[in-house]
Amino acid sequence: MKIRNSLQLASAFAAGLLFAGGLCLSGMTNPAKILGFLDLFGRWDPTLVFVMMGAVATHAVLYRLVTRRAAPLFAERFAIPSRKTVDAPLVVGSALFGIGWGLAGYCPGPAVTSLASGRGSALIFVGGMVIGLGLYSLFDRAGTRRSSSSMTATAGGAR
Image 1 (cartoon, rainbow, N blue to C red):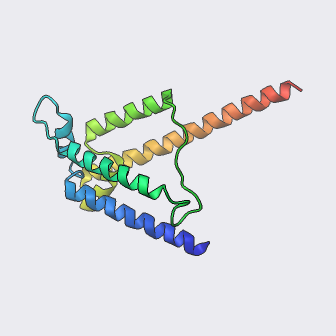
Image 2 (cartoon, rainbow, N blue to C red; image 1 turned 120 degrees about the vertical axis):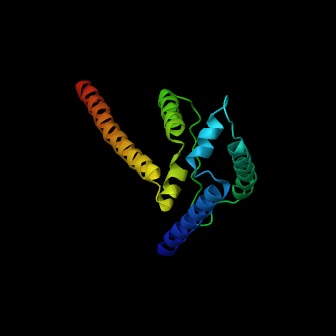
Image 3 (tube, rainbow, N blue to C red; image 1 turned 180 degrees about the horizontal axis):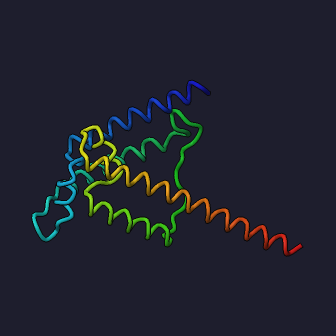
């Protein structure tokens, strides 16, 4: 089991390096590239479209090949989401993501990768992202506690 965990960590690290290398090579760690892509009525830069097409095509082929296996190489089973519904949290989260992306020119992967460049904007963005994740975690836990205590109270009252 310990060897499997080490292999999972090593493969995750290798995948992260590959992803970071792709982001750097394609210029996606440069916020100006992203903001140029989002500037549809100004000096539009279509580079991101080609990066995304390459990523989606690669994923589509490899996903089909990899999921033919009974299990992944370094795990007992595939972790494929089963939920396919579009709900309010997904829509609100997507909108917040898009607003942050449009304002800063960073999304999480390129922002973390850009930390290595020493860019102050990347540090500020990642700091804000970490604070946002922490706040979400606090509110989510508080909401979970409230809903589980109200369900307990309802179940307790029905006795």
